Image 1 (cartoon, rainbow, N blue to C red):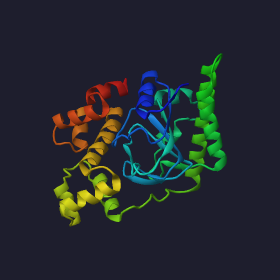
Image 2 (tube, rainbow, N blue to C red):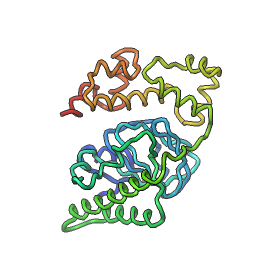
Image 3 (cartoon, one colour):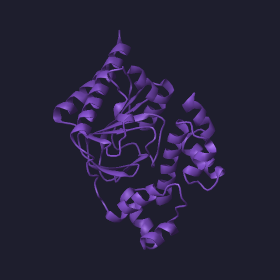
Image 4 (spheres, rainbow, N blue to C red):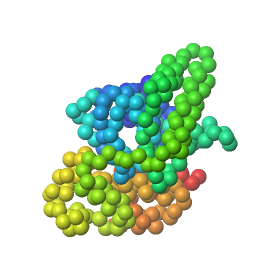
Amino acid sequence: MKEYTSCKQAISNCLESKTFAIAHLYNEEKTMNMHIHDCYELFYCISGGKQFLIDNKFYEIKSGDLFVINQYESHYLTRIDQVILERIVIPIHSEYLKSLSTEETNLDYCFSHRPTSFSHRISLSREQQQRFIYYVNKITSASAYGKDIIERSAFMELMVLVNGTCYTNRKLRKLESTYKYNQQVEEILTYINKNISGDITIAHLSSHFYLSESYICRIFKSITGTTINKYITARRITIAKSLLASGSNVGSVCEQCGFNDYSNFLKAFTKAVGISPKKYAQISIS
């Protein structure tokens, strides 16, 4: 399998082939703004310390950390310009992963199991890190006769490793504390997510937290790496995707996600996802 050097190309190939792809990245590619894409994602950090914002949770990234992100979770790498971050990103088509699962072994578990208390991060042991890299190398180096079978079997073993580790970690401990970079920003994030269906404006947040508009915008951007409005839009699109995939009416989804009117919802959703809400609903439930 080809090993990509661009995350965007890997995601595009995954969605086109409806299987999976692998990208080995350094600091050459500019990271995307806060985004959501229609595939699962494994994000493995080889070296470099960074910060991850996934939905409303902050994580400090360390070597050996593996993050599991599903297609409904907005995410954004922040504070990465100053430090080189070597990582492996594996976008996975959800239906492909489900097709490889059995009644006894759900390879979709790490992406679909989202209890109230959970962490996107799995800190792999040294042995687990070595096995993870081994499987990735086996997939990307397969050639000649039987390469498709080798790639698929190695990928299945990789997912058994990921899901087994994820399952064990969640059984052994409750939600690990997310990295608290700033108490004020954490409170703002919590408030936004609790009131995401309402009319949240910078003026409203400023009044609620007794902070000036310029100050609240400045601290939010400095800590998260994105603006308040971009974050709110990304979270609303995330929720909209989940509701549409579950069969909710497009009109009611627009209201539940806090968009002022349908035209704003249509524009924002289409820009973020690439297709209209109605089209996305049709594809998701077909």
